[in-house]
Image (cartoon, rainbow, N blue to C red; front, side, top):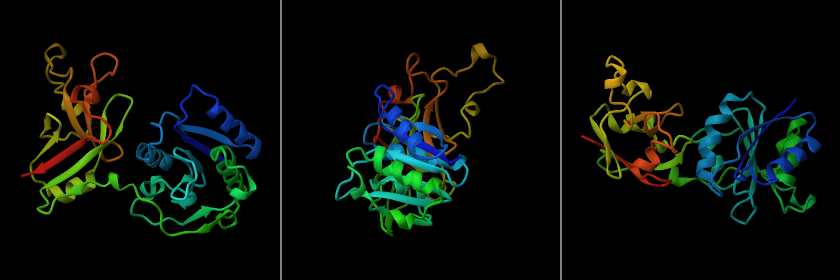
Length: 276
């Protein structure tokens, strides 16, 4: 039973997701289809890459991940299939693949060249699913494409370190369901540049001078609940993906607000760490 995951920017209102699942069942023998997300912001490869990179690792080796975000084939955006870390990824060369593999080497990447066999008006429904079916039968990547060694990079995902190495200029790359904002500053980069120095994190008009390991660590539970300062408490921490996250304790985007709304932080907003 091959595992096929789906990640798209289709949303759930239209018929697109159902059509893709129907096509998978008609093409792949006895598939197990798992939705990663269909709520990726339209044409946002950065958000898609962040979500998929941190989700695929929990799936068994040999899983096939179909990426339907910015999937139109253009002269600058060819279709790829990649074997990396024992997983298959199928999508467009819009930078997503570069973030998934990071600085690690993939087992193989091919530029898909079977488009003459189909209309190509709906790539995920035709090309990507056909490739997934081929791979589910233990087919070789060489049959569906030509091996390549260079792919497009999402350069905006890399924070900038100044020459004095006392400052990291990062940016918001994702806002989660709770309105917490995730930056492109990883724990590894923070520690390499910071070298245990004191720091201040600047995000618009908000400053952070401490990083917690968990949300609850920011709350002093030795104080009686009615006297605690926890509602709306701002928190900086490294999340389970090891990215610097700015949050509000027990935030709710519909009621008390969130880091996104209260701090005024949106996608691509600057977040700077200054070391002393």
